Amino acid sequence: MTISLDDQALQSLITALPGQIARARRSAIGTTVTYARQRLQAQMIARTGLPARVFRRVRIKTRRRPESGTVWLGYNPVKAAYVGRVKQDPQGAFAGDYFFPDSFVVRMQSGHVGIFKRGGQSRLGLVEQTVDLSAGPAVARSVAADAGRELRARLADRLRQLNPALS
Figure 1: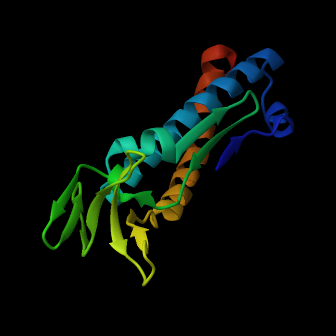
Figure 2: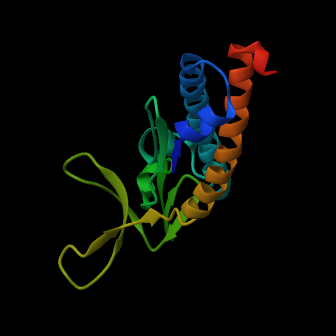
């Protein structure tokens, strides 16, 4: 999702000084990007039950520029070992609250710990177990709609703060 403003439409509506418009735009975009990232993270945690650390560093990225801001959400599945503490059980393996039946915990030579399942007839036919993030696109669409409304409200507030004559 990308958040940006059109200067032409903005300047025709507002009689503020160009410097005030630019400052208000930068501030509104920056705070809206932060708002969108926080909402995206909170909704993904609520929908998937995954811990916040999964989304904090890898799955949600933000970029702020003077003219626009971007919030990115990765939809790829999360490796089971990143979900929570890994534990072997006679019927399978646990990663946090997730259970993977007929799976087992493996520590590779590189030090990587993962949950794997046999997947084929080959000698090392192992398939690493993952947790799907299928809720991602729906959450991103709802947050994008909220971010547009939030951007307009924050821009209007910031312009009123910078130029009291607009109130």
